[in-house]
Image (cartoon, rainbow, N blue to C red; front, top):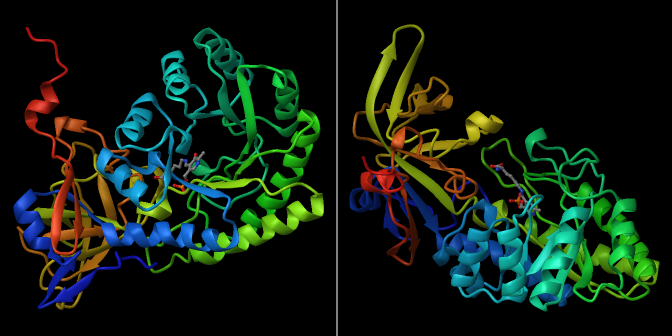
Length: 430
Ligand code: LLP
C-alpha cells in the first residue's frame, strides 16, 4: 500500500478516486469533505485475513474502531470478514447496530463506566479487563445479571516500539493494562469465579509502528505469558490478542511494513513458539485500526484566500483545519498534499496550509510545495482515513464535514455533514 488509495488515478489533469472526480464530489457534497475509497479498505482487510486464512485458520481480525467508525463503515468491514474493537458505550452500540455479532466485538478501555460495563455484559461482548477494580465490578455485575462474561486480561508486554510517546502503550508506566505478575494474580483470584470466563491475554505495543522486530518479540513474550496463564488456570488458553499498531505511509519518507508479510510472519512465529512451549495454538486476534482505513481516506478542502507575507511566507487558507485534522498539532504528523485539478502543473510555490480556526497553531503544514493556487482551488490531504474524523471537534462551532464512500463510480454518504443547527442542538433555550 502506498500513500494514495488504490483507485487513485489522474485523467485530463483531474484526480479520480473510486472512478469519481474529486472536484465533482466537492461540488456535490461541499468542502471540507472526507472521501473514503472502499476498494482500498477491502484490500487492506484482505491483507490481514487472506494470509491468516491460509496459515492460521483459528483467527479473528477486529478493526480498532477508535480509528474512526460509523454504522456503514462497520457494516462494510463486516462484509470484509472483520469484527470490531470498541472503547465506549456508543462505539459498542454502533457495532451492534452495524450487525456485528457480539462474539466478534471486544470492549476495551482503562476506565469503563458502570453503564458501559452493563451494556457489555448484557450484549454478550468480550471485555478486555484493564485492572483489578474493573474485574471486581464486572464480576459483581455479571452475577447480578445472571451472566458469564468472556474476558481477556490486558498485559503490558514491556516492549519498546519506536513511535511517538503519546501513542506508545506497551511500556511499564503505561496507563493501560497490568504488569505480568498482577495479571497472573488477578487470574488466580478469578479462576473459579462462575461469572468470569478468562479467554486469554491481550497486548498492544503502540501505534504507527514501522519495525517488525517488536511484533516478533511480542509473540515470544506473549506465548511465555500464555503458558504462565495456563499454569495458573490449570487449563489450555483459548485466545491470544496481539493488538494492532501497524504503521502506514503518510509521506515519501515513511517505510511501513507490508501487512500481509508481517501477518503471515507473525502467525508462523506464533506456531513455532507455541510448539516449543508445548501449548496448543490459541485463537489469534489482531486489532488493526489505522492500517485498515488510513490510506483509504483523504480530505478535500477549498482554498478561500491566499495571504502573502512578502519575504516571510505565503498562507493558503483552507475551509477546514485543526478541527478535522488535529494530528499535525498533536503529534507533529506529516501528510502528503496535492491539488485535485490541473495536477500536471509543476509544483513551484511553497505554501503554509492554514486552517480557518481561531488559533495560530491551526496550520496543517508550514511548508508544502504545490502548483500556484488560486482562490477556489481544491487542496487534497492524503492518508486522513484514520483518527481524523474520529478525533474531529466542532471547535468554533464549525460543523464537521461529511464522510462519503466511493466505489465503482458511485458515491454514498456514510456520515452526513453537520449543520449549523446541529451545533446548537444541545443548548438549553432561553
Ligand atoms: N488496540 C488497542 C488496544 C489500541 O489502543 C489501539 C490504538 C489499536 C488497537 C489500534 O492501533 P492502530 O492499528 O490504529 O495503530 N490518535 C492516534 C492513535 C492512537 C492509537 C490508540 N490506540 C493517532 O492519530 O495517531
